[in-house]
Length: 631
Image 1 (spheres, rainbow, N blue to C red):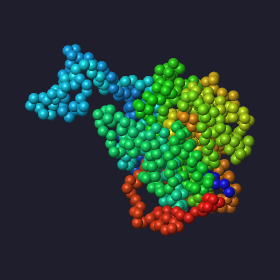
Image 2: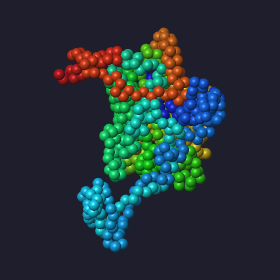
Image 3: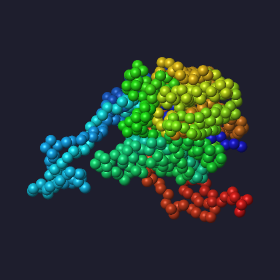
Image 4: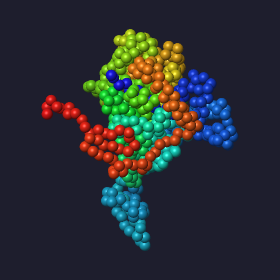
């Protein structure tokens, strides 16, 4: 009997807000929400952004005046809309009009030499060519320097960066607030906050889950693509000597791209189980999801936390992508007649490059039997993720044929599980949709050709990078949590940043909406997530709706399904309690630094098993010889 990997919780943060309980998804379709959901969404984001706070008497504004939710929505709507999604790069990251740099100077002395005074401790060793240092009389701490000939110096300066827009976490929200996050790179602060949000969304205490499984039946699969390139990570380490400083002891280890898994294992989950940090450029989240689905399906894992955290809104990363002509610049967008940074990302429209974004996304998967046993709230299923490389190519960053394979296999899996009719009438694509001129042509061609092969017409396409930008490793995580929201609520976020689909897009069999698409009447059974990464990293995943997954499991478990539904009520009640707190800005990040470590003496070891405190089942040390035919 095949194991079905089911989604039992998810959380994280991106420019649209909090992922748990679909807040970020609701921000994307804000114009289409009814009154109650709109008020809840704006009020929740207002609390996150510090525009209001929750007190004993309810919502309080900056002056301490009490407001109800409707008043919060009315007074804060403009600030919430302007302070979320893609927007001009804000000073909390850097000023794109004054980016620090060094200007090289070639100085020729007018009289054959320069003469200047230096503190002795600043005197370089060895002396540069043409320098002569002499003691300053009566001052042993200083020297006179005579520099002859041309001197090549570098002068601290600023420069204007052509890229002005990025997808940034909601204005005023600091992911490091609420726990001891000092000296941690922003990406790891986001990882702790995002993984904590996912755990709280489960509605079942983490300790109860641990008690039901062996330690090695839990797996964490998470990474980042760029490393932690901020000042507290590899970026600070690489800059230190050039800026006259020293690298710290923390910058190198905290900069590793495995840290979104390592930090979560050590400080959030306290996991002793399996851990992986797979990177596949912009498809990294789906690569990690593939590993988790594989391990759950083969029985090696029963619980998996899949994630990615990326904080790429730094001058260096932005400049690097800009020098590849990959990003939408102010000048290029002006040529397209648009000066609004909020509209720079327009997948499948007249575009000029992508917009970087920051995000952390974490999703919990379980095998179906454990989810039913514990009464977890099944919010979807991921039966298949497919990965293919591009083969021989010219440019390592250019697209290739591998995405035909990965996407085609995911579509075929949907047909096999759901049938032809559901695939053709009740599925949608969540495209990579990077917003580059090349992507709009190549990815749409893949979709259109496969739509023809499978007999699909008017295939709905969603491109979430129009809202949150390209969060690199976490990008397909942004797509997945948005897809889970769409599968639940029936609204497909439209690409509202453009006025028309570009004429070179292959859209004969596609439906690329410019406004939110209401699919509630016909229903949405499946989403196909697509990711294309530099280097030929292609991944496509099939996601089933909660309704479809529940229908499948009800048939599998028969009369036991009713008992599961009763257990689920308690789970939903506890999860709703957290949702209410989170909507008030009370996120309660989990950070177990040095807390409850397991002493060696408490690990019980025998020839057959190892027992670890806190886990209900031992790790078996007995196994069959897989090579018995050769031994």
